[in-house]
Every structure is written in C-alpha cells, then in structure tokens.
Image 1 (cartoon, rainbow, N blue to C red):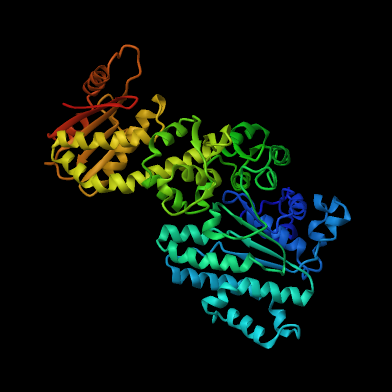
Image 2: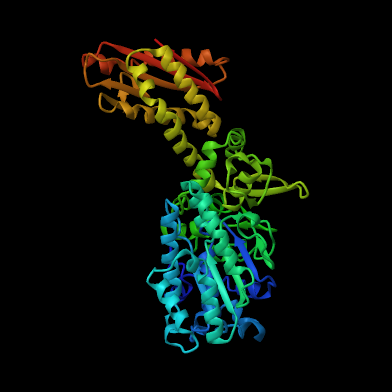
Length: 555
C-alpha cells in the first residue's frame, strides 16, 4: 500500500515518493480549455488548491526538462497531442501568498518581499543572460536582497513575466496561490485600508495590460469584490463552488472515495466516514469529501475533526462574535436544519459582519455551509445546511471559545463570588443569563442536556481551584453525586450540585423534576462524605431543565 503524504503539497515530491495520489490531472486539461486570460478559482482551505497549482507548475514549466515521468500513468497523458504538447512548453511564475499575513502593513510588506525573493530565486539564471539588460539585472538583485521600494515591489511580477517572455520567446503562465490571505489578515488585524490600496495597485499592475502572459491562475478561499481589488480588469473570470467548471477538480468525489475505500479496505467505516467528511457540493457535483480530513483519517483511523486545525478561522470567529443576525440561524443549523438565506459570493470585507448576504457567502466559500436547494436564482436565495459532523463540531467549538472568552470570562469572577458567599439569588440571576445565551447557540437535546450542563458548570468552577476542591461523579452515601465543591478551608461553604432533565412521564412540570432531584440527593445521602470529614456549612443545589426552560433551587 502506498503511503499517505500528509501535508505534502508539492506534486513532484508526492510522485517521486510514490505517495497515494488521487488523479486530478484532468484539471490541466480544464485549464487549457478555459478561454479566460485570468482565472480565479475559490475553494475552502485544504481542498487541494496548492497541490493542484504545483501540478500545473510542473506540467507547464519549460525549465523542468524531465517531468514527463511525473505524469506517466495519469489521465492527462491519455489526451491528444494538443494537450500533451503543453508539457514543459511555457515559462512559469509561481507565487504563494500563504505566509503574507502579518499584524501590520509594514510587516505585510516584508512578508511580500520574502515571497518575491522565493519567486525570483527560481529564475536566477536570468542574471547570466545577455537577453536581460544591466539595469534589469540590478532590479532582480534588488529584489533578491530585499532592497526594493514599494514601486518596484508592485511591478515585480509583471517585470519578471517580461524577462521570461524575452528569454524564452514564449508567453508566461502565472500561478498565484492563496491570493486573498493578505486581505483577510489585514482586515482582522486592522490595517485593511492600507493593504487594499497597495494590493489593488499590485494586482492591477500584474494583470492589467500585461502582454507577456499566456494565462494567469489564482486560487484562494473567498471571492473578493471585483471593485475592491480587480476593477477595470478585462478577460477575468471567477469560478466559485457554485460553478460547474472545475467542479470535480478539487476535493474527493464519490467515485474517487469508492476507490479509496476499496484500496484501504475500510468498507465497514464507510457510513460513518460519510457522516463526518462528506456533504460538500461544488457546482452540480454532490457528495464531495474533504480531502485533508480523509487523508488524516486514513493515517489515524479515528473519526474526529481534522480540518479545525488547518487555519486560524479568525475572520469567521470575528463574524460570529459581532453579528447580531446569526444567533437563531446558527441554532437551527446546529440542529441539522436547512435555513433560507440570501447569498452574495462577491465578498466585501469591510463591515462584513453587518451584511448578512456577505456572511453567508463567505461561510459557503470557506466550507462551513453547503447549498441544499436553490430557492430563487434571480434573488440569490438558497437553502443551506452545515455539510457534516466535522463542521458542526468546528462551529460549536468556535461558539464555545467565543462564549468563554467574551461572556463567561467577563462575569466569571463575580458569579463565583456570589456562589461561595451564598449570595445565591444574584448567582441564579447571572447564571440564568449565561445558560440562556449558551443554550440559544448550542444544539442540546434531551439525551445530552445533563452532560452539557454538567460540563458547563465544571468549566465555570475551575475558577475556584485555588480555594476549593472540585469533585465530579464520585461516590458518597448510597450513590454518585454530580458535583461536589469542597472548600480547602473547612470553615468555608461547601456545595452539592445535581443536574436533572425533565424526561419521565410522571414529571408534568419542571417543578416535578426539581422535587425528584431533591429527593435523590436526600435519599442517597450525598452529604454524608462531607459530614464525616467535619464540614457543616453544606448547601445543596438542584439544576433542572426542560429544553431551554431552567429552574434552580437551593435547600
């Protein structure tokens, strides 16, 4: 069995190591057939964009003389001469912007200079050519030594395409990977206006009226509004996950997944794998699997979220934190419902959290949503869902983190002080607000509610670790209590907490649930352990709930 090349996005390395490879080489044919001068393809992170760009690079690049062996046995080599003659035919410029994501505009410029150094290093042979003028060689050296000013930086890609066109006497293929990383980073870090002003000129100079290019291909996660970045650019075409062109070139299709299941003999896990990592739709192609997650699963053989750690998700976190419109919709999505939404895929970054159609558009492009049904193409109305278990888990994690940092973190000290000082009416009032907020975000069914409450309160009580021992699900008396708070100072107040969900037929009201919980505490004598060790100030607390209805009682 071939090895899994986790994290290897260099096509040549993957093939030379004989790692397992899903044949996406017909993407090369699709690129050749496309008539647009500049092609932008947006896909979620870790959906094979960089590997596909690397494959294009090795296929077209004229200076890679012995690359035919890399493509032996792949579908592209079965095509007619029109396509195979393009192998090693063009000079290629490859630029990745994945690391141009710093905390300030000045540092972003330094990151971009580093990216240009890496790009120009591939073509240092130009310094030895008599086809390149001396003043141009000086420009090349200025870039290689990071001495260029912003004017030279803005023109660096166009200048290099001119040099290569003259050197090889052939038009240039330009590949720019992760084009939108600097833009999103600039917005999150607060220097968007400076960054967009620079990048608009940079991209304009690179593409507009550049006679040296055969074709340019850009990849990224989101489609930044044309007027923001690419205004006035002709022969420019964008392909999002809503378009049919290139639909099966990224991600793992149903047929490809069937082959993987057979190759790795994992037929028994097929249904669960589908629940966790399937569910994406690109154009009219349904049943697309997340490739990053599948490759990690094949390595670890464990069903869990893998995609969560692939990027910072900062922009999505910011949107969920600031948008007042997402609360009810996210609750329904987490319950596996489809919601109807207006979707604008042309992302306008500034103030995105206040533009619901842009929010849904970004979440769709970044892989957090899938289109279930088109309601009105003219009005851009669609029914959308969360695609799979992995995304549900990721969304819940983002919400928990936000909730913990922004809500619980602000009030935790005062809530816990109210508890230990027996200011319990104030404690209940504050706790109720937290619970209602949390329940409104999280999908908590009857089967999971007790565990959810239990974990939620345990998480809060960690703040008392300096003065209390926090015990959970331990034996005391004739049973197991849910939570016991034992003060390190025996004169302090101790607590027994029990959580109950209204579930049996005899409980007609939440008050009945409270009484049953109190009865359980008394009959099973949970306080015995504390009394035996000399604790006298014991407070017993019941937390009862029915759906989002909540009642707390102290006795």
